[in-house]
Image (tube, rainbow, N blue to C red; front, side, top):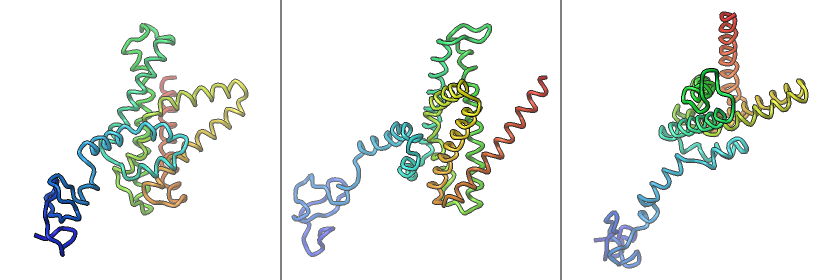
Length: 246
């Protein structure tokens, strides 16, 4: 029997994992592993890798600081489990934050501090935000396909879902910062709001650009138009709802 890697030599052993015939140069002991199997990760390493791929704390924390770097490292890690994990961690963080705000703040009329109903009341806006995020994600994917996108729907959703886990805390920080700007001047508040909007659009464009291998213009078209359309629709619904209440 010939060696799998040196056909001119006689095999004296087999790989303990896959059974490939091996010569003395490749290793002659019973527990020898061939070159191919030595490169492949073990089952333990696979489990650790899968876990680290789902619980990506560094990526979630650094996304709002270095979005381009995070998206480049994430483009090949898309999975349905990853999407579910991003959404789940976002909801858990929103619930924790809502609970902390609720027990330290003034509860709604008729509710005691820390009640489950009150906590759900505080998380309603985040759930609405998730619905808007989903709409933007699906519409932006449609636009990306129209202009020649190469990424799959799973990749698209996964990349855009990376913002969700830390979003509750980011919203709290931005809200506090904008409130401080309002105390200074309305003009400064407007400038701050414009900066936040442009930065958020930059993150969206970076995700679409990396997912679909777009240039800046294609990514901007795929990202900005859906945001404008859906934002206008949400604004119109809010306007109609308030008029009906009046």
